[in-house]
Image 1: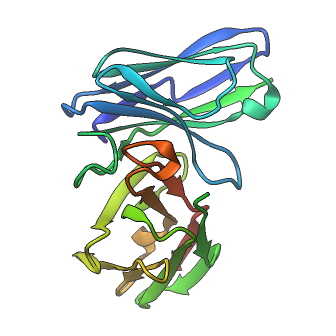
Image 2: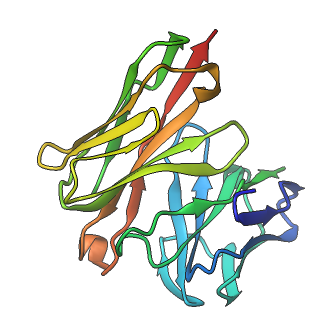
Length: 116
Length: 118
């Protein structure tokens, strides 16, 4: 149990589908993140939320749409994805925005997304 | 732009060996450096976090050092075990103002795949 739960664990979708990834944390953290992990590439930061407000959108295409309804939940809405979007999508949280004091990231186990 | 490099990309050792994983970064203006472990198909587990003012951190058989001025960190694993087999990633957090933000940005290396065989 990591403290950060992601669902679903695996997702296969066609390019015309709309789906959502869900992340939930009950660690009392105020910051949440979406990362993308592609094969043979470093983790890429996609979005950062602090106290439900988006503080960073790291040049992510609009076919990825994040939503943070409260500090415990984070969603990533997906539509008209491309095959190259296939990757492991990782959610993370931290007590405060990462980098302010001793506030390490806690990761979920990820959603393995395959776009056909 | 911060770049993080990890060497070697893969490492295979017999059980019981002491080993060192290397991480280098191009911009020394960091806030902290964090080492993670990732098991296949799983998320990342934080192992050690070193603040920029610190030189090393220890947890059990793990010791991480940081030389900020030279842009290097090492993760030392003592008496390796098969259960240590995983991918090890280091990540640096930019200092204040890095990337134009007040909280910096976490930049990851590509990781070192470690296999410890019995």
